[in-house]
Amino acid sequence: STGLRRYWCSLPRSMLSLFQSATGGVSWEDILDPLEDVGLLGMSLVILYVCFTQLAVLNVLTGVFCQSAIDSAAHDHELLAQSMLENKSQYILKIKAIFEDLDLDGNGLVPVEEFKERFKDLKVRAYFETLDVDTTDLKALFYLMDLEQEATVDLEDFVEFCLRLKGAASNLSMAKLSRSHDIMMARFKT
Image (cartoon, rainbow, N blue to C red; front, top):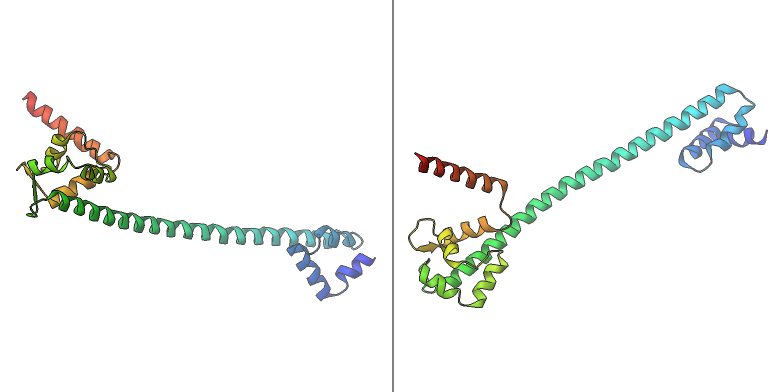
């Protein structure tokens, strides 16, 4: 038959036919039909070859694609972490600039009076709003910043406070607050 001569006349031609069927150059059905005259064994070997190459090639390609995606995702995590660190550094620089603006006499401490006075300036309020810090209750805001309860805030306390307030409350922060409340209530009862 012409199909048998076309696809299977020699070893090199047979190899080319199998390659073409595996890569989509020729339909594997086209190279299989002439083998009906040869017998079931020839057809079975071609079907086995096509199945093996298709599954093996697809598995290798899928594996390469998945590995590439995993590597890319891992790289994205590294980029995200790096970006977060850079954002934190920028945020701290903003906080320090705001503190310098609050510290009128430049001594590194902001007393409660200076704090209240500076908050009359809309620019200072706007600075705090860019840091996502609520400025509606200045007394409570200053009280929370004044960790040593000396009626002054230094740069370190100010930065720490602003970093803690950034974003939503974490589960850990809420758990610590709840635990502190429980301890205080237990002391109060005894």
